[in-house]
Length: 268
Image 1 (tube, rainbow, N blue to C red):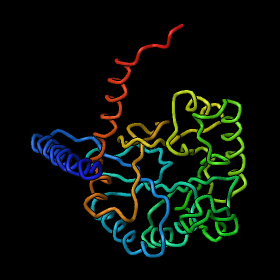
Image 2: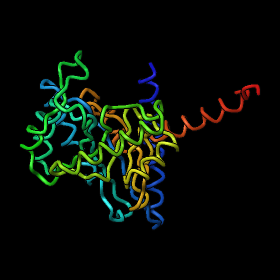
Image 3: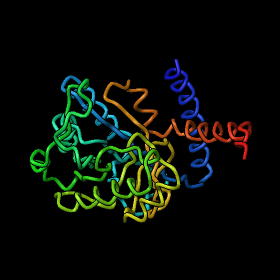
Image 4: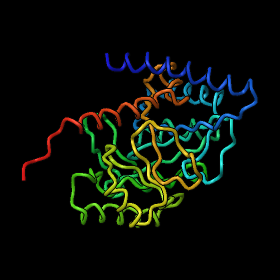
């Protein structure tokens, strides 16, 4: 039910946003660019056709850009950056060839210390190996960091978190097509403390699991993303791609603030 409610509310937000942008264009006021970062995980064999359909839909509506883009985006246009977490073999085998054939850039965030392992045995999938990564030489495929062991950085000590960040970044330095400046938080576990640790470790851009607009500035450090799956309906994918789920980010912030008002401080 929650998924249906989100879908309905996102349809309303999408319609309202489109009317607002159309009204601005009618009176000659430039509209800001809209950029959304999408996050995939697995793409199984039976999902390849649906994934390809999503890519074709994306190209009809938006301009794909790399996740490490530094240029100022053009007002009035819609952009999408595609990312994938963990480094699953199914994604390399099924999704990457479809993206290469369409020249769509992709950034894959690797769990550098567990390559080749089946960390989710119930999914009948495993992480890629360095040898398998070496078969992809296209400059449109970029590799970023997802820690060494897929650690929840908000649940470990600063010493452990810093080691996960630094060691993973160091491992990327020896992998072709890697960009050691890019990092994605495992499980979306993120706060200001671990963001500061990312800066200290040398990262220049980090990706969080919050569906907010991206790349408002070429030097943006914390970039929001929204999860998508090949199993998403085309309507659901379209709304996510167009940024219509951005309202959920504001709802999360309001919920946290409301909860804080009624949370009593712990007794001294």
